[in-house]
Amino acid sequence: MAREVDLRTGAEADRKPILVDDRPIVTRERGAKATAWWVVLTLVNASFAIIAAVVPLRRILADGDVNTWWNYTANEWLINYGDGAVRRGLGGEILRRLPLDSDRTAVTVVVAGLAVLVPLLFAVLVQLVIRSRRTGWPLLLWGIPGGFLLGTWQIAWLPISDTQVLFATRKEYAFAAVLLALAIALRLTARVMLLAVIFGLVMGAGALVHEALVLPFAVAGSALVIFAQRNGLRLRTLAAIWLPVIAAVVVAVALPDPDSTSIQRQWSALDEQTRSWLGGEIGWPMRWLGLDLPYAVKATAATMADRDMLLPWLALCLFSVGWTLAALRLVDTSGRAFRASLAVSAGVTVAVLPLVALGIDWGRFAVVVATCTAIACLGRQLHDPPESRAAGNGAGPIVLAAVLVGLLALIGVPEAGPPLGGLRGDAPASD
Image (cartoon, rainbow, N blue to C red; front, side):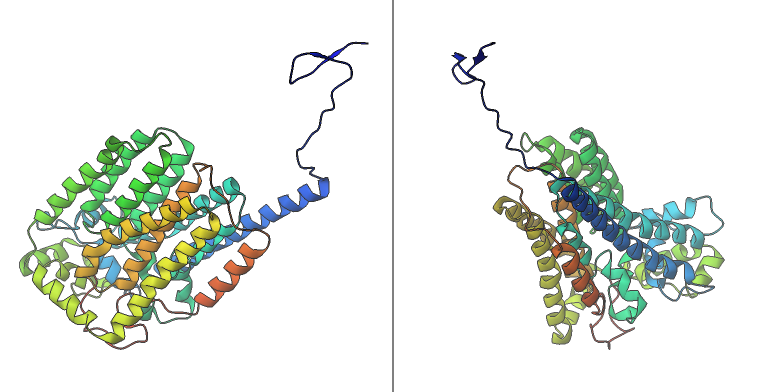
């Protein structure tokens, strides 16, 4: 009889060793249930993405000869270089140069495209985390108050002026698309430096589209790059992001503020059909650029002094960011993950302070903080942190997500006006 060898000592053994397979036994029935469960999670994720895309898309495309829903944000997109370079004019100038029949068509195509693209990219990111971490808790991040899903779902039955439903048509959707693309790309390739360079250049151009909005998204992108570098922080990758961003912000701020004549020329640079579609009058976004800094700060401070606006918006800021941190805590219950979430949310909050000082859209800025934090921390989960562990799974993620999203869909999230109405028309324009 052939003699066996003791695997521990190398000596010959007198009997055959006993091999024990300690791997969990997966029965066919158990495997089928697990597969069915992940299919359900995928379907719920896809359903949220479809709702988040279709609802605003129907409203964006439904306007007839006059834009009655997203007139303000269409004006914001169409700030242009009709009388020379001005802050936030690059986006409108690019739209005017597109080979389409009118500026109206150009801005509609771009905004509608972003309204579909952003929920799709967010769904891909959520699905990657569900698959990587084997948990359904990332679905809760669809429920961020005023975010990609709820910020559009509320359109169906709440007054538009009292809710955060314009989020899908604002410029932050363009920044969110770039940030989401970075998070997904960092999962697909290890070329972190190349992605950092590309992201920095795109964000630099973005500073000429909106010099203040670029900051929180650049902070979130920097966090994604740090999380993707397993061998530690490399300052050169952060420099690749921030050097073009800072340079472009300085250029944008140094551009002269347009006077009334310059604003009129910007407006006249748009074709007649588009001006008629926008109501025939110069919109607030173009006029806002002509206001000096002291006036903007004074107007914001005066508005925030009204307790009817200040307290609800402070509560919303805490609720929206708190929701995000709680959901991320369920995705990964480790202490290191929670500290990372706090650090990202703090960094993004600091980055939006210039907007808070100069604009009254506090609900909108709270949503920016929450969504940037969610994207960056979900991206962290794709790089397999060894200490990562999710909360208990089961039916909890789907039940909780469905119930809370359903309830929050009935709550109006304020954007640029009191949550319960009043003070409309005469309020300072949003920044």
